[in-house]
Image 1 (cartoon, rainbow, N blue to C red):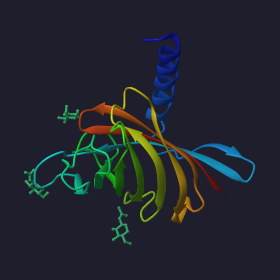
Image 2: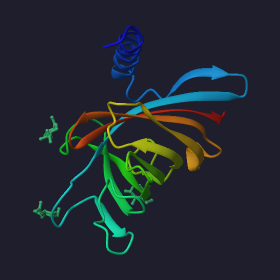
Image 3: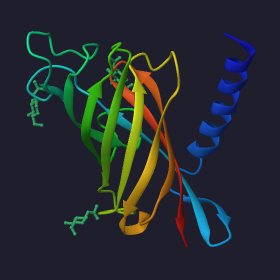
Image 4: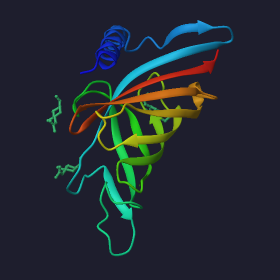
Length: 178
Ligand SMILES: *[C@@H]1O[C@H](CO)[C@@H](O)[C@H](O)[C@H]1NC(C)=O
Ligand SMILES: *[C@@H]1O[C@H](CO)[C@@H](O)[C@H](O)[C@H]1NC(C)=O
Ligand SMILES: *[C@@H]1O[C@H](CO)[C@@H](O)[C@H](O)[C@H]1NC(C)=O
């Protein structure tokens, strides 16, 4: 691990340990007329079978529609939970579309998070950006480009980190008007 990577990792650990104690305490900072909200949740994916959460629906004729084949488009619908387990309380649903890049290493993604937990029930966040097939190679960060309900006008980022092969940690950090 390079020096930069290990210091990044440390910062990340710090951030994660801070959020671990304040999972439900939303605003972490007040800046002028805005408040900064940070939330850490987990997206649970199922790759195969009748309950698969990411399914190829279109692709280039004559090519295998796979996650490393240019032009393949996937529909995603993942469960978002409080902790890293499918049995952890559900906080929402992540729904969207993704398209594989020419070199097969990345996916352009556009998705919407609909919250269903008591605190944010009915509020949504819209996100957009590029995620890398090998999440460990490069950090994947999506822009939060909007929201509704309690998150109206949200802007910020969501950091995606693999927890294991089927679970992705989502760290949302965004500003909304007070
Ligand atoms: C798919 O989901 C349904 C409803 O939650 C469940 O009853 C079923 O066991 C699941 N099937 C598999 C193969 O996991
Ligand atoms: C990922 O972690 C969860 C919770 O610890 C576990 O239930 C699941 O089986 C793991 N999945 C894989 C593919 O390792
Ligand atoms: C969220 O809102 C819906 C619709 O208003 C309601 O049916 C549901 O019980 C609410 N869920 C929670 C956890 O408050």
